[in-house]
Structure formats: C-alpha cells, structure tokens
Image (cartoon, rainbow, N blue to C red; front, top):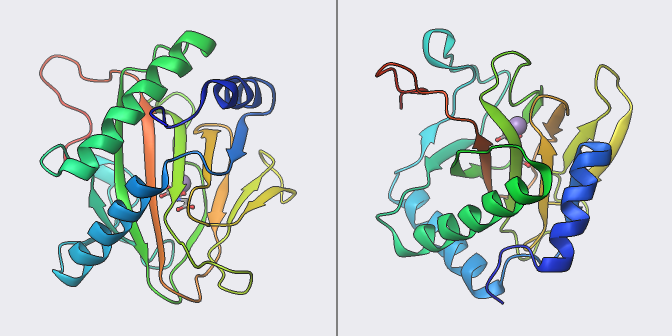
Length: 214
Ligand code: OGA
Ligand code: MN
C-alpha cells in the first residue's frame, strides 16, 4: 500500500471533514512504516532528543505543564523514515486540496511522547482569524495499547462539553479534524504513549517573516 489513506478512505475522510469537521479511521498507515517510526521515537527519547512542548506561538509561546506534559520531536527530512511519512502527508495534502479546495500549502508535524501521567488538556489547534493551522492530523504508534492504558483523544462539539468521540490511540489509527472548529483533549496516559501530531497549514509567510519560527 502506498498512499497513507487509501482512495476509498480519502472519500470517507474528506466527506467526514466537510460534513462533521472530523474523521477517524483504522489501518491507514502501512505497518512497517509505523513500526519503524515507533522504533525511531523510542531511540530519540532514549537519546534525550525530545523537547518539552509549548503552547501558543511566537510572542505568546509558553511552556505550561498544567496544560500539556508531552514531549516532542519535530519531523524532518534528514531521517529516511520521517521523510517517507512526510512524503505521504504531501500526498494527503494534495488529496485534501483536490476534494475540499482548502488551498493547504504545507505540512508540519512532530513525534510526541506522553510518559505515564502525561496529558494535553482541552484546546484548539488554531484560532479563527489566525488562519494558520487548517486541518489537524494525529497518527498513533502504540502496538500494544489496550483499554485501561488511557491516553484517548477526545473530540468535543464546538463550545460544548459534549463529547463527539473518544479515539483509542492504537497503532494504525488516524484522526483528522478541522483545527479551528474541534476542541479536543488527550486524557492522561497510563503507559508510554507514542503519536504523531501534525497540521496542514496555509502559507502565512509574509515579507520575510517566516511563521512560525522554531
Ligand atoms: C496536539 C494534540 C492529540 C493526540 O498535539 O495538538 O492534540 O492525540 N494531539 O496526540
Ligand atoms: Mn491538538
């Protein structure tokens, strides 16, 4: 299987995004790539290459462990397995643009490690008007995850406590949602939780100002 999301799933995913603002599916990334990314994540964590994740952007960038306590490593093209994943995200970006006319310009994403006890409280990935992150994607790498291990992703109805869905962070599951519309939360993990979180963005770089800086 070459595409990250198969042709029939792309139609389900794009109609889900269009009609309800989210979609979740299973077995969408081929197993060997997921396994390789999971091994790489463990290796990078052991080498202490992960950093504390922040919230907000640029001038209002904060490290706030009351809000999130995962650790991250930005995906890059230097590493072959990450490059393979980024190539697939590129295909997905083109599929989303073709089906939804979103004009998505680029993808950015990171590996995320939630040690036992780590969480990410309810938040939006982007705020209306800021128009930076348009579609959020999360891919899970946890081959042995089982109920009781925690770390579920909860999607909520906009401006409400009503839950839409709890996504189990099992290897091969992918969730897509509109970044400005869907508040969401990562429940506390009880075992090590590995994921990839990313965003399809518009081109926000103006007059030499590259957004966001890293
Ligand atoms: C994020 C996020 C969800 C997840 O990193 O912004 O919401 O399930 N991640 O890892
Ligand atoms: Mn998020």
